[in-house]
Image (tube, rainbow, N blue to C red; front, side):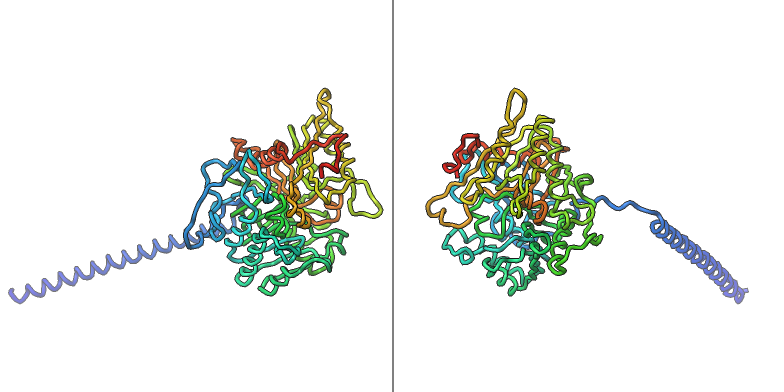
Length: 510
């Protein structure tokens, strides 16, 4: 019996081993089955996502932004009547600092000529500082559409200390041209125009393309805008001219971290770039130049945390891709939508084809102003520049418009002339000391353009504009149009503004 015990124990061990193996096999089969089911579920989910149609996301300016560039960041709040609320620190102190990385940030900009002061408010941030900020932010590309380039004293035959800002911009852009893609679309220069700036930039690595708009449409490339990294933009009245930073009154806007809007402005730039190479205007334009955003279907997005309807207009019509609102149609539409007031600040206002031969009358804008004044009882104000280069023919038309004023009949069109004062030394600076603004603001919309207001600029000359409607805002103090209205009223009520009447002596004014 003693010899049987070990054999019994061995039998028990064998049975236990077999039972363990059987359980292991069952467990393994369960694992395989579960894995197979999981794989089938994943495959089914992927197939569902592939076959199920999905609406594309609504374009927005809230894409994730890259982290700020390394280095110290010095924040300061904007000063002046900017009214953005929420205590936002919007700009950075110093030329070398980066832009605050906030989605959909729009800031009004000004160039205030030296010696021009306003007691009632502080000006908006400078165009000069915004250009430096844009160059500091550039990581891949800078595209600039421009009329001409005179950023140095050498270009203008002057010895002005105030040219230092323009010279700084040129040096910074030249340095940047060796690091990122810099493309410049510029109106084909006349032989008498300085080209040293463009030669320097080209030698530094910038790609420059001349656009012969005179040959294409008998006009010029009068546009002034920047597109940086396909997500930041600048647009406004300032030329690439040192005087536009320190000796000429300018207004523009910069929009940071808004790739949807930058992509749309980029299409206008690409049109110029195409025209500079092909030297012919396509009809129709390829679909790559088309846009979905216009006066009828604006881009809906938040700017400064405020619901906004935005679009970009362009001129002449022959340069517009499918869907693009022409600049003239944009202006007429903004006037039509106004319910309370229309304020206009432009350098020149003429209901004519200013540069045509033979002479032609062109009353599209003039007629619209008279019509909305009469039919809708909208209050109309025009602030027009008066300087040494002002054409005398402009004033009979302005006086005619100003005569549409009768409080009893509720007709209210008024015109004032804005004169930038100049010292004897400043008078020696050629083509300076002028209010060069090109904007309109109503109770609903801010229109910031690049064109003077005569027929040629909408029929044959290349220009563009940013149109912003923030009437959905809960507080009017935070809107772009309320800020632009404050700028206009500051200038209108200033000592530099003089009413135009039937008895005004223009020789004493300009």
